[in-house]
Image (cartoon, rainbow, N blue to C red; front, side):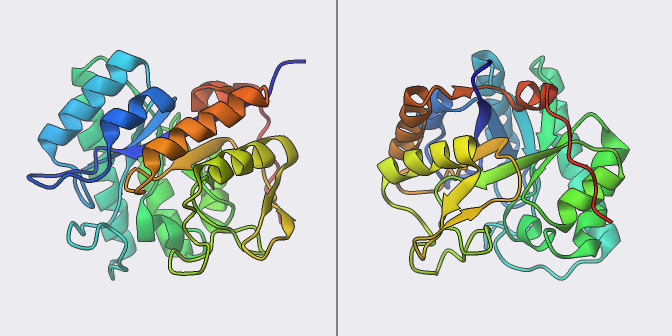
Length: 268
């Protein structure tokens, strides 16, 4: 029997201008895939160019990480926007990243909405429709990376593949979803715990909540995400990879992870 596989992804390329966010150089050796900022919540043309070039050279999958036009708030504030504005903003950002991917001989494999845009799309149909309409219009082979919810449903309605993500450095509640960063235990500062939880979700399909209960995620963990701006991101990445190796879990690109999986049937 083949060992379980999972993609390990980090948010990359989120620096811009004179501002450095995260430690991309430290992360490259720990990930199989990337979520690259496209210039709206982070990143700029020079940063995108360097990040894409490095990922292509290292064989790291390229993913678009579109967000709200919110450099000041790092895309973590709610921006009041129409469905058309969200759709065209996402389409614009995918196209921008694809230009750099093509220039460096690479291809995009997935789209992972960033920050508040991505979290709201889990429950808001307007956001979910806008994001998935943009992806479907650009390239139906792109995988939508998200958690369970409305965004996954809308992606599946458009015959787009979904890669279910687990936030490796975030605390989860009794509902099997992340708690707010401000919640006690919302941001995990123990790299060894990050590694143990990663193994748990991949091999058992459960996560230990911030209240200490093991709860089911309700879906496979196709993607383990490390936030690039976490203060311990390098330690988290090393501990996660070491824990996966020790448990016999193979880290692979997301396209490979999903290649032999059947997408679950839509409900209703």
